[in-house]
Image (tube, rainbow, N blue to C red):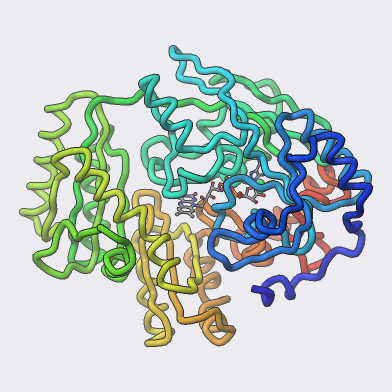
Length: 483
Ligand code: FAD
């Protein structure tokens, strides 16, 4: 810890917390929702990767929009900086304070407000945990349009604020399409009611999109309305091996063409990722143990015709095997085997964490070029680190992870800015789905023009003139003309 925070200077215009502030918050929220306990603060100050650590002295747990509004109105008038926090599973240092910002966690705002079984529209509070929403909808015969490995902890407000992608993106697309409305509290405490439940509404600027993916820098999301698809009866999962990356690519084009409307996930991991999962996660077995393979692909189909879908997938697999695109493969025979396949793919981030310090890059790169970066990084880093590639191949999203014995400036200098330059050169994005947070705020120019960043900064200034909302994140902080 520490070295990351020291690259940023605390904004001197922010006040420091005093006992009057704490009394005010206790008056609004009640004693037990104003947390000063050191152990609980320690957890809230550290991110999931244990890479970023702040020194906040206060964690606030509002129970409704009105409380959020009062907190922000007060913080704005006192110039107290705040960090909105959800499940704290973000991977770019966005959800924890950099210095002593007050942490506002939406976790107590976790009610389901309404669910319409005809339209599939769910309205809920921002602190609902994704997995709880998934279970709730399962009982209603519906699914969430997004799913991710952190579902047991992440909150829908955090998902919306990061515009999370995840494992179902290839089928259901972005939250910009699925979120129909939201309620957000602005820095001055004003509540923006944009909680529409309509598929179509072209009445002027659609401002909710500003909050989707703005990582808590423009307001605190308090309620969300989201379109959920019906749960279909036939889900099939295949775990496959490919000998080279070109075969993975060809398999993807074939899958889009031949599985078409039933394709619901297309994920990949390389042999380095597989080794980590097998070595660091208990009870995980390689479903294709007969040989060592270079790449593994997980394909899921979801449809409504049980025998039709299975036949379609089997024909696709047979053809891919005969044409040499896949060298081995297995189709899940029951729900346990299906979960064990998902456990491998979803377990990669956890396995990497257990292996030690990790430099994580979440990149959008044209699929045909994507794995070239992993190979180049292996050449650059040699034996000093383990370079791992996996991700949402169906969406052109690579998770490049570099597992090292320690966080070390020499290793970092080998990786950055090279990774960003390479991505920019290939017209990729330096953040596919995780956001910029603290980690990449200063790297934004690799993916956005100066004019665009200037407009972003103007919007930030308009909505949060004192800059109290999640400072040092998203927008560049050391190039002062933008801050
Ligand atoms: P936090 O981590 O608490 O916050 C993330 C950002 O959102 C911060 O900037 C925070 O200030 C802001 N924020 C949180 N709540 C609010 C709110 N109510 N209002 C305003 N701002 C808010 N991400 C993907 O996109 N796809 C994946 O497949 C994926 N897989 C993951 C797997 C694992 C094992 C882990 C650990 C993470 C993964 N992530 C993935 C990253 C992370 O889970 C997502 O970014 C998630 O959406 C964050 O939600 P959260 O509630 O934990 O938010």
